Amino acid sequence: EAQVTQNPRYLITVTGKKLTVTCSQNMNHEYMSWYRQDPGLGLRQIYYSMNVEVTDKGDVPEGYKVSRKEKRNFPLILESPSPNQTSLYFCASSFQAGGHTGELFFGEGSRLTVL
Amino acid sequence: GQNIDQPTEMTATEGAIVQINCTYQTSGFNGLFWYQQHAGEAPTFLSYNVLDGLEEKGRFSSFLSRSKGYSYLLLKELQMKDSASYLCAVSLHGSGNTGKLIFGQGTTLQVKP
Image (tube, rainbow over all chains, first blue to last red; front, side, top):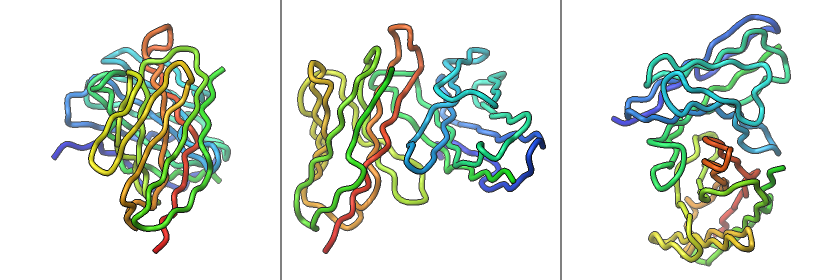
């Protein structure tokens, strides 16, 4: 089954404790991206990757890191989480960044709470 | 800057037609997407427009006017299951904005019996 898998789905952590949210897709997509969704602010892009070893900042990259060492995986790293990073996070992938094959396939989301 | 505007909430009656508008002002444009998101779930793709005009797909249609920076999503024969948030998103791929996708805040549609 074609899918984007995120883990963990739910996490409560404390300020400063490094965490990683994993994202894996099995569709051989070149493009992957991370978003956070907050009430009243909609989906905001954190980082994206056009292909292996190619990553770039979205609109809200501060406090996050990513890596793309393999085509299928795109982990999101919070080196020192803070309460303002409490949010619902979505990973998404598509065949390419834009055009008719730019349709995004989303993971189920990871709800993160930082105390 | 980049700006996408949608109404926050809309209400419509089962069986009716509803139009959800989206206006955008972005530095670059490579296409416009509409996604549907039910409460507690991930967004799912509805439509993509890159040229001016209407794209029809079953009960859903999407329109784009690039000169006006305007799009709308038209939902016909509304069903209760259409109650969801509808997200407008502009692809900035190319034009120095490679890979960026900007979402509007979303429009929450409530369908009433």
